[in-house]
Length: 158
Image (tube, rainbow, N blue to C red; front, side):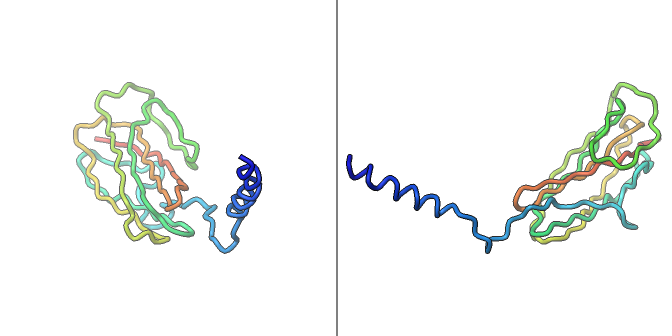
């Protein structure tokens, strides 16, 4: 018992020294970024998509250290909700109930783990979905778990 009491302070000190900050280790303190603000970026705010047509959804994602994954989420905005990152608001149709909305949620891994990647997803708007207001939301996660997202108002028409 006396040995435990004698060595306990030494063990605590060793534990504290083992937890000290090491400035030689790079810490990731930055979120990744998402941009559709380039010529091929799609969809732009207030973009009109036609049922049955095929589109290439494109966004550039970057990170200071390493990218890990991204997702695309398309969901109706018939209730006129907003997302905290929307920069531009489009003219919305009347509030309505959804009967057969377009719902898409896809997750993808970025295998290379590099610092820059262009998302390119070819999607066809289903012919039988409700027309009206939708959100297209891109999300990206870096290798250390930081996440960013951006939501864009779009409209689906006949």
